[in-house]
Length: 485
Image 1 (cartoon, one colour):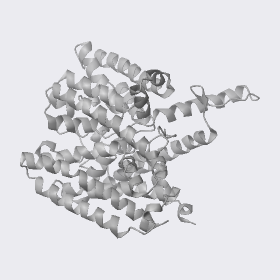
Image 2: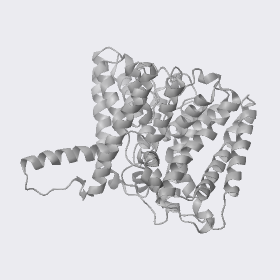
Image 3: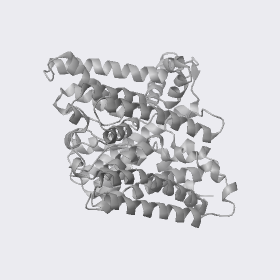
Image 4: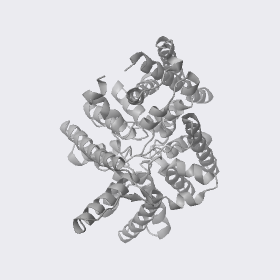
């Protein structure tokens, strides 16, 4: 492990994060709010530290260096934690939170696109700080590391190892021969949808500031809002449906969006993962609509469809926005939303959770084992569409599934051990490792995470990064063989 080289690359990442702080700083100057000076100090410290690391750890052979598999993993995992530390500086310097723990929690919740918050009164925070809070979502959505892939080639460093470590899903889609071009394609698609949603939200009555902040939270499937009551504050069916549509867009593999834009819509319709994702959404909305109407939660079908579709899209894509308190809905509705938390979005999307593709592969593999019991001499392979799935991918999915569940339960026990009730502990752990944000119990859609102890917050923060980096990238750092030559 060439630590000097690793720190050199992380320095470039920190410097880029510092430069993005100029945007919320500009909003602070525009509004003349109290967050302007804290943002300025945070920008200077971050850019200065990043620049110092980049130039201080640069070696003569840096431009000719090739990132090894181990170094790629280390850069990604450590890079996210470092991003969380420096991303918390605006909150710390502004005095938004009393301690470092809350600042790091809020920052990594943003970068990991979890949306779990410890803010009790969001609207009292300066707008520049709120903009930075939402911007961390947008940067983390497609991945800070994927963004850096467009920069690394200019530094003379290849980035395929980083791409494999960062891009969510069992099999990363390489759309272009050169990794830099792939990163740029993904970011162009991401930016295009972000611009469209911002414009549509402004047509619905939001100002530019709120439109941008809610777009960041939607496209990144993060869920940070600028209002205490989240999207419900605007009380607009138009805004609800616009955000619902774009949450679903963000929950779909961005490679499919690129092919759709290139004039290949049939590729999306033929994709088995997309079909399952769409079917889950439609079925869940129909069932929940029927139950909330029978339970008397809403007086008419249009309101029921509006609120159930928003909540299902928000939970299924792990966005975390809320327009209704689903804890007032029938128990079966809450159970179905809990199932959505486990499933998550599609592989290659900005969504969290286990991913639809993994659930599909696990179900297919389980069925195949039953089929073999009935027909012991049969020879069959798991297929996704018409394509057979390699055995190493299947074993990797099962390994991920077991690790995901084990770490989820372990985190829940840690949180419960700090004095939290069992339901809230498991809900919080699930919401954080699934990068969802709101859960049930004391972390429901109308509450936050401020009441947890510092130890519980550290455990949940670690879970956020585990979920965002798909478990393996972080856990592998704790395997002794990883560090041996």
